Structures are given as structure tokens and as C-alpha cells.
Image 1 (tube, one colour):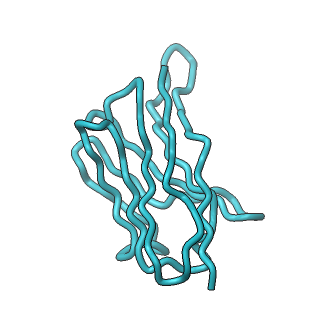
Image 2 (cartoon, helix red, strand yellow; image 1 turned 45 degrees about the horizontal axis):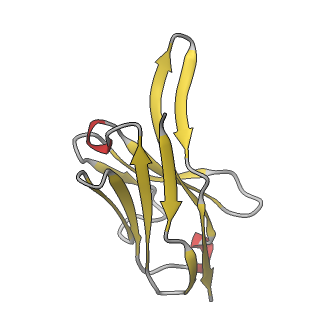
Length: 120
């Protein structure tokens, strides 16, 4: 069974940093793309960035240059390093693994999220 568990959220002042972790079980992160999403209060969930199986990363324009996604293959964990945080980065952060479809079922797995609050 695929499980993703986020941790590392909390309260931080604007300009500060946090590192979120996504511990993955049931699949191997080095063979699958892992995505980070966030959802701010009253807003739609948005893609923050991704790391592909070959290690290529992509980021939303709003976080480019401030956020970095990495992974530890031995720990089967993906990280989201967030620097120069802004109040508008306040959101629940989720990691996601979308594995496509199999026998009519969509294989789309989500963690429960971790809350990041950035104070001004």
C-alpha cells in the first residue's frame, strides 16, 4: 500500500526557512515522480513543484529561486526546502504520487498535509 507522510510544518517569521519531509512507503521515490502541492485558506490547491524519477525538478513561478525539492533514496524520502518565506506561502502542504491508471483505477496518492504558517 502506498503511503505518504508529511512533516516539518510550523510557524515561521517572514524571511525564515523550513524544510518539509515526505516519507514514502509502498513505492520507490527514485523510480517515481513526487509532487508537492499547497492549499491556502479559501484557495484552490496548487502545484508547488516536482521531482521526476531522473531527479529533474520543476517549480511554480511563485516559488522559483526560493524553494528546492530533493530526495534521499536511501530513506525513500522527498524534501521541500523553503527559504525566504513570505506570508503568502502560508498553506497546507501536501506531497503526492500520481502513478497513472491500472485496470480502470486511478493511482493517485496523497499525504494528509502539514501546515506552514508564515507571520509578517
